[in-house]
Image (cartoon, one colour):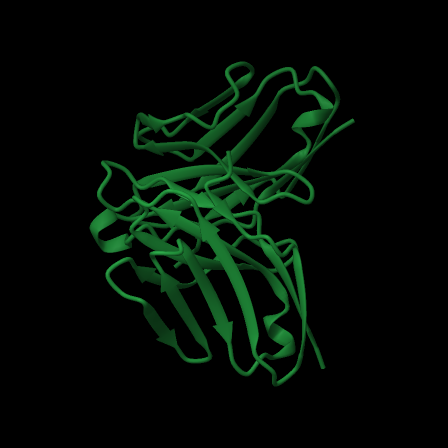
Length: 116
Length: 114
């Protein structure tokens, strides 16, 4: 009965490289959310996905960031050509069918991205 | 434009006393509110929630109060224990919308002093 799994836990990239963050939701959960937490700040919503669909990406920067949740496999948050300002903790959360969930989301432990 | 505000970045409380964490929101359409707790190097975990049709919800040592007219909610922890030391995030959502977007506040770091 594993929880939300994120990997890697820590990721170091040099400026200009690509970062790929993975998230496996809890079993039976079809909704995935990505959040970013900058140092000394709260959780900022980035994107909400269901299987094979992006439902809301209003929190995603317009360039360099993309997310997917394929039919098979984990959800991926991809950051191309990383810059120092991308250094943050990225959290993934999942939830089951909304009537049951009452908007309760289950979070992974996060991926801490450091851009050198 | 911060829709959910937690104006106290930090709070220190003596063990055994009451901890009161406050949260204000700006959107009167929010109809469901949640509190999450986060330890360092871990993800947030759900703590307690309240629907806008209620003004109080209690779960053990944790009680959440909602004042809709003031657009204010608070989390009370009684008695506070050292293990409660964590960052607490207030969150608000719209259950009536077509999807489950949740807006988080910036968090309050609670320290319970033994």
